[in-house]
Image 1 (cartoon, one colour):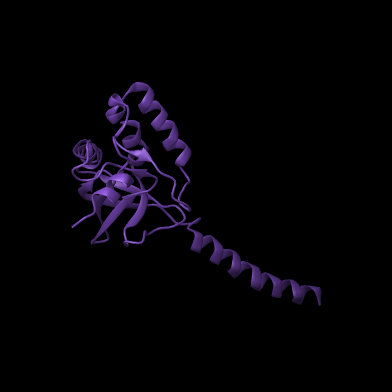
Image 2 (tube, rainbow, N blue to C red):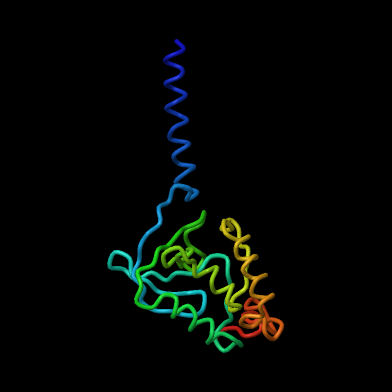
Length: 171
């Protein structure tokens, strides 16, 4: 009797556990992609298995088109990614409401998300549930401020990218 009940419980628990792990992204594997182009400081296009993917960097917000430092942020991302095979690491949510792939982007051990903040060309943003590396981004921001990198040389941006988007809607 005990053996039959334990098999029954196990048959319920294993699928539940696997569903929870895979649906949350906890067991999601990193993927290698080929860089295609930069869209802006925090977005790029890559090739994966013959398809183009638009990737939005998790946890950072870079200046928008025509906003101060937007060109420098875009150029930083281009230099980081140009002619490289990159690795995408995923967090809990893989896509945003616009259908873009959400990822941490690596060249070897260096993470673009973190490095663009450290260069003073993006700010950290915590958008749950994707907050795995947020504390790293805050430390990179602290370092950029202390060393007066990027827009921290002048004390920061006049407006955050989010404020800029609200006051400069796309036409």
